[in-house]
Amino acid sequence: MEREEVINFSTEDPENVNIPESLAPIAWEFFETLTYRMKKIEAVSLITECLKTLAVLNSLRPDFLHNQRRLEEKVFPLLQKLIDSKRRNEDLYSLADIRLLTEATDLLKAFVTYKERPVKEDFKGLMNRTLSTITEELKRNQEHYEKQISGELVKSLLEKIEQLTS
Amino acid sequence: MLVAFLEMALPQDFVRFVPSFVRSLNKFTDQYYLDDTTGSIEVALKLYLRTSEFLRQTIEADEKLVLDTLKTSNLLRQMLMRIKPFILSSDKKMSFYSIQILRSTFPVLASTLICDIIAANVIF
Image (tube, rainbow over all chains, first blue to last red; front, side, top):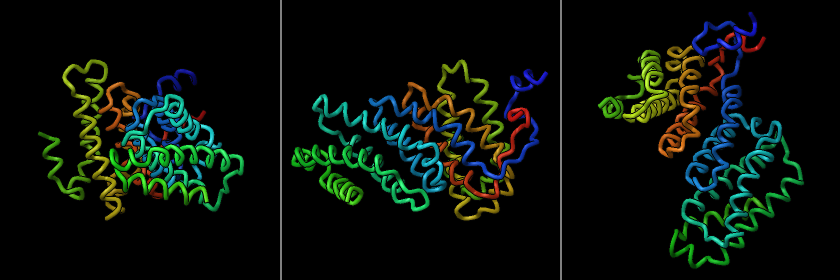
C-alpha cells in the first residue's frame, strides 16, 4: 500500500507536510539537471545561463553551493574541462567563451568571499592555476581579442581574475 | 497573441490571475507534452517565462501581494516540474527558456514567508 502511494505521488496531491523553506529543496531537485546541462560544452551560451542561475542561487542562499562541496566538486570541474579542451585544441576563445568566463569568475568571487564558510586551500590553489591559464591565453593573443571581440570585455575579465587571484 | 498581450500587461495587475493562468497553462503543457508537432510547448515556455518574470518583478515591489496570491510554493513547484525536462532539451531555445524560468522563480522561492508544502508520502 505504502509502495503504491509513493508511485502515485503527484504534485497535485493535497499538502500535509510543511517545510519552512522553499528554495533549497527546489534548488536541490534542479541542481543535478543544471550540472548535467553544463556537461555539453559545445552549448557555451547555455552553460553561461546555468552559471547565471547558480549565481542568483548563491546570492540568495550562499550555503547551498558550499554544502557537499557542490561548486568545488560538481561545477568547477566542468569549467576546467572547457578550458582544457580549448587549450588542447589551441582554440581561441569566442565572445560566448569570454562571457562564460566572466560569469564563472563572478560566481567564483562571490563563492570564495562568503565569510561564513571559508574555502579550503586546495581548492583555492586549483582555482588560481585554472584562472592563470585563462590569463595566459588572453595575454598571449590580447591583440586578437581586443580587435575581434571586445577590448573592454577582455580588460574587465583580466581585472576580475587579478582581483580574485591576488 | 497571448504572449503579446502579456508583454503589455502590468506585472502587479497580472499577479492576481497567476494561479488560474498557471493551472490552465499546466493543462495545456500536459496535453502537448508527448506529441508536440506545432511548437505549442515553446509557446507555453514563453508564457511560463513571462509569468515567472512578473512574479519576480512584483515580489521586489510588493512582496505581500505575491505571497497572498501564491500562499505556498506548490504552484511554482508544479510549474517547475513541467519545465524541468526541457532544461536538457536538444532544442537550445527550449533549454534557454527553461533555465531562465527557473532563475526567475528563485527570488520568489527565497521569500521566507513561502513554505514548501509537499505530500507526506514523499518522506515516509
